[in-house]
Length: 343
Image (cartoon, rainbow, N blue to C red; front, side):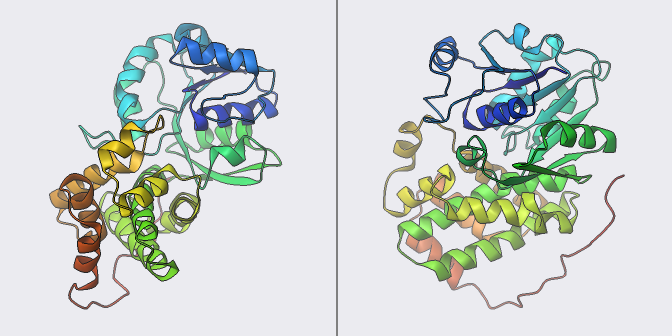
């Protein structure tokens, strides 16, 4: 088997390392030739994962055709806003029947599509319909070092999910399967909104109570919208839901939380974006979720206030006041529907 990981950022590099640990020949594609050369020369990704030595069976290249040629498994580890353009460029190099896995946690802002929908729409069916997604509480900085991690792989096809599970799983990287592609993707994308909000709360020095409330009520919003979009509520109680939410809202590795902290301290959002080389997925996802909520008439007060802070220059303290002074409500809602999903 040959695997290709498209995207040599922190997450793509970490996933390539997992495959290499499993003795899978893997090609890691970097968009910039300078980055590819630097990784080759130093045997580490000094730009995105400094200090983590990469295994020698990872072949680094900036040649897309070379990386994808005859690959049995392709992992798309790209920022969500680049996925559509990239797959249009690369599908012509895919072999027939290849498994394509999205490792991106976001939505296409223009179309509001999930990443698996982008892949399914852009890859001709005569090439492949074997699409999967991988998600969960995963900081690349820990995965690349071999620290114990658990993730979930979802696909509409059981055999595809199990094939991806077999390729990735080892003693440090545990992989579960799930037929709920929609829920797994939405949990991974929408938790970034709440991570920004949690960071804002921390930047305002509001403490643990505030962060816990945001995480809990944030998951209610995620589940509410997810169910309306066809997800299974039970998925949001799993690794790609509450699992990813916890780690992203509480860890210093989280770029979304770090961005929120800076916003809470009064820093301009444009300055934050321009000062980091990594994509803060939660910013565009906030806009996408806000648009979906309005379109579907779904109540998402935390997301709405996050949108106004990020895109309408609303003062974060005013946003908190708006949330805290809303009309009283019952906590438990009739949103849970444990329907059977897939397979």
